[in-house]
Image 1: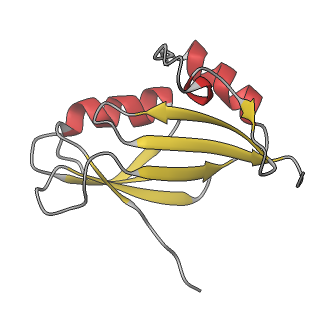
Image 2: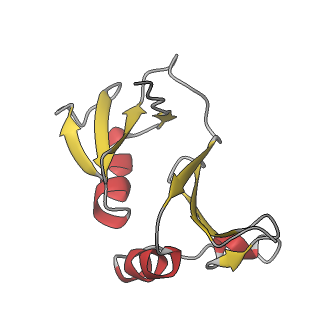
Length: 126
């Protein structure tokens, strides 16, 4: 079995952990140090991501796709937990779920370090 695990670069581990665990429903399973630099393993519905504030681990501003079965319910949950919509008129997919022409329904969330998580649900091909 092959697994691909993204390393998400962060500036302040404590702020990133708060955002990913409190708002986005990830669970910290490894890495107990909130100081910087540090490394942490998060899990959400069996999928892992790594958070790292080490200088050589990844770049800021990356995009990561997270698939889900109900993007609308997930968006409502995140907003209820404190997710703020950024008010990006040039990017309505940051404001809420949007049907894309390529057959998905998506919304985007930027983390505290400018990385984008694209929550997506397949709705069929056009």
